[in-house]
Image (cartoon, rainbow, N blue to C red):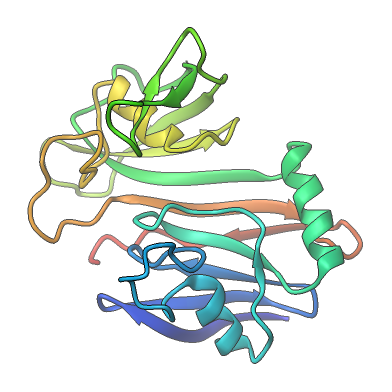
Length: 227
């Protein structure tokens, strides 16, 4: 059952939206600032996690996140409602059967209209939770990107679509910073952000095989520029 109008679980004025709900899964549009799963930091409110809010909205026991979005990243997140669905979706991710497109607003402009970045990444032991380009012990990481025009953005800001081939921690953020175009609002890899400025990284499209039957599902959640 497609349900694009069900909303709840607000954070900072943004609301969690359910885009797809059936017996097997829930796909939501997560607001920036909401963790995918309950935070380990006990000082955080215990009831703002995406899996908890989505379960309450869907009237179902807590679903399980099939993948994660960083707390400050908004957009499409798949949650499984059953163990078989979790296993099937997990295999799809592991086997490269899921396609994701992120949209970011970056400072500056990439050096070409599109490109491919191959840079191995690993933890930065001097500044966790930062990651860094590490050609010695880093794990392979690949990102495709293309610039997007015609959005009427301020001077010095460019919209970029990002297609991750791999899924390393902070991959898109590190790759764009290495390219010389850090994501607007990125406090870890960009210049100091203005107070209250969100991280402008959004999971805008996802294509995956449905866990029951394997038929392809395509969902989109455009980045709202007035947030």
